[in-house]
Length: 295
Image (cartoon, rainbow, N blue to C red; front, side, top):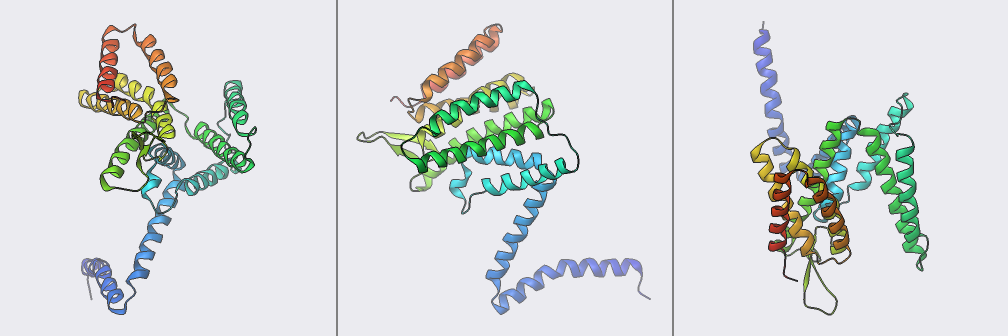
């Protein structure tokens, strides 16, 4: 009789040999293109299963995808599938009796103010198609806010979300530089009409949009510099903040400068109580400004 150990070795050998035999057979009969499609489908199903079982991870991936503009380099847009899978997982939790994590008056008042500000610029429009498109975008933003408020429950989870936002904003600078380096058409740079000046766009194509994303992530990077414990990590965050400041100025977006001023003023007023932090912050911002384009 064959021993259990011999059977196990034979089974493991067969499992290890199967991919090789499958590859040879597919290559021999000319079905490699179907194998590639099958591998892509398998990877997509596996990723969807992970997002469905861990919707908070899916939210992190969605936020990074939006802030980084990584869709510029992908053949398909992943935002809608990610939102759909995360929403399906959350709805299933609600059907099972989990209480939606939506706080009281604080949350709804802030959402109400955001609704008034957004609808003021989307409803009153000369182009009805543009108005409807913007309202659809606004509804998707509200949906992401509801998912974030429901899934982010602890300070550690909120801190992780902040780091993901900041990483996405720094990532769009890196992807924009990569797009320029490889000569990707319509990406990385945007020319001002009638003036021979190139504006940095990151991976968002629109320089004003890129500047808004980077500006909103700037205070989160400064927060990371202050609250990280490792010296090496702090240096990495400092360099990332400098990169972000350079990227913001390189967009030459006039609309973002008031926002940057408000963000920096608020941070400086908060940090002025700590002389050391204040000096470090001013040095980081000064370095970013010095490295920014002269225009």
